Amino acid sequence: MDLLADVLAVGGVRGTAGARIEAGGTWGLAWHVIGAAAFYAVTSGTAWLSLPERDPRQLMPGDVVLLPSGTPHALTGAPGTPAATCPRCDEAMANGSALRVGAGEVRTHILGATYEYDPTVTTQVMAALPQVVHIRADHGGTCLDDTVRLLSRELAYPQVATTFVLNRLVDILLVQLLRVWLARRPDEVRGTWLSGITDPVVGVALTKLHQEPARTWTTETLAAELTISRSTLTRRFRAVTGSAPADYLTRWRMDLAAIRLRDTDDTLDSIARSVGYTSVYAFSRAFRRSRSQAPGQFRSAARGRLVLPG
Image (cartoon, rainbow, N blue to C red; front, top):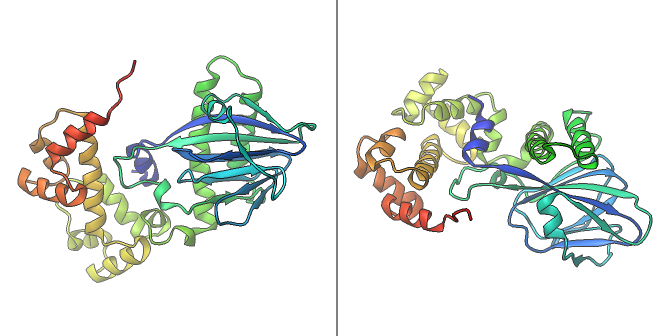
């Protein structure tokens, strides 16, 4: 069981290659509504990233930056440069086309991408990250550099199935960025489940819960699996993730149940048993506490929100 891969898959995280920004002279672009996590990789030149109530930060060649919550932001050629909403920006970010800005010679190239995720799932990678994840080019020469170069080459020379390749590369970029971030800035995610991945005790505990979410876990049985005391597990788990093992397990079970309620016609009894409840009553009570709706109400509402193709 790969814990990060499991959460990414269940959370429905999907990357889409966005615009190729080609900038020169005096330029500025603003995004006021994103609706998804935004990612940028500077392949040449420099840019300045501005967010509300934050000092602008300079992005250098080789830098990558992720805005997990899709915070409104601006990219400019210099700090203080006015940035207007670009009428072509949303289209370019959606289809990966080139976006030429500024009147001067092109000196800055930036690759953009977006990441969407399933709002039904509360255990999300993006929600565990700070407002800005900035990996500078001097991060030690990881595979992140190689993937950015592949992405840049594919964008510059599109071929058969380029869209498919680009979107897969964008997914890989996210995992590689997370690897570097967790290795270099573990304190930035302390108090979230994501910090448990690198903890030798909590990481094993989380993996076991994900491997067998329907098992009748107690703090005692989980501690026994790890050959540590109940008090040690509780203290360590809470210090690292910010929650108790039982609370985390309940939240994960409700995430799995919510997906099945929305996407399948499985009976409540079947769903309840798949996430560790021996009765529909006990499951319904836990689900209502978690989602403020009975399972049947949630199923009807979730399906009502689905947009059918065509």
